[in-house]
Amino acid sequence: MAIIALQSASTGLTALNTQLDVIANNLANVNTPGFKQSRANFQDLLYLERAQAGTENANGDQRPTGLYVGLGVQVSATQQSFEQGAPLATGRTLDIMIEGNGFFRVQTEPEVGNGYGYARAGNFTLNSEGEIVLANDQGRRLDPNISIPEDATQVSISSNGEVSVIQPGNIEPTVVGQIEIATFINPAGLESIGENLWIETAASGPAQTGEPSTENRGKLLQGYLEASNVDPTKELIELIRTQRAFDMNSQVIRASDEVLRTVSQLRT
Image (cartoon, rainbow, N blue to C red; front, side, top):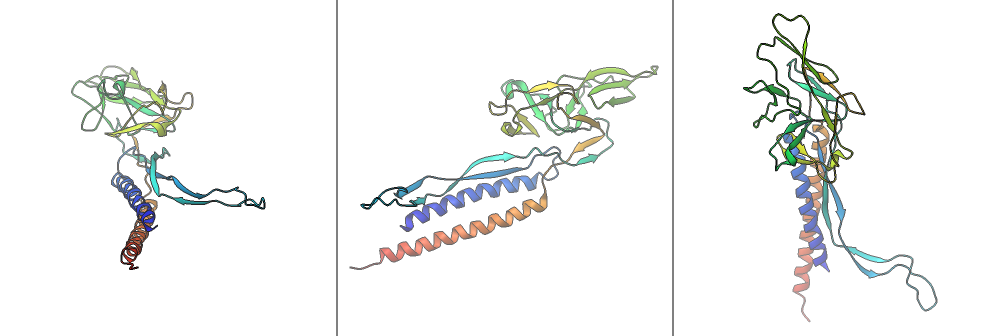
């Protein structure tokens, strides 16, 4: 009956509303360093089986197809794309980009990701103690912790993560730390927690940390940031498609309502 169409169309509106939320978030973060675009994955729901394929009649003939009526759609997951974002030259000493696979690891509260968060955004700065921290509202410390001497006149970060400084009276640079990056067997399984951070989950697998440029880890570029990988043109096209699909499901609801009203007004 039309009641099934009404319910199926309502699930379509709910799913499309979620997709609209995902697109809006992508577009809102088009200028967020290290942000990764998400998409909504859809899956159909259960089916009413009104006739089964393969059943035989009295002559032994088989029914070639069944009769199934679907009950709508739902959003099964939001899937992030970890495609590399474009490099943005900033010239800032503590802006670092990972070219290739990997995440910076920073310290969080013990109850958040077992004390570690992971970021593609490499916009770092120094805190009051000279430690390298993320330049966001929480100032998460880089892990392993690296401190820059107060009298350092120059800070250099090599492609393999070695941090060295030049101090007054010294000609040769002094190594003060080693930046490590983490990789995951399934980065799409990471959980986004805001602050440009992810935390590991059972789906992502444990973090494998090590020096950049080793074991399929990317290399570091000092003075660059990784831009968001959101393509505004594609997102706007997807927005239009979502709007049209929303309109069509609304039309189904109106048509179902008309059919139900006609049925309710029938007289014997």
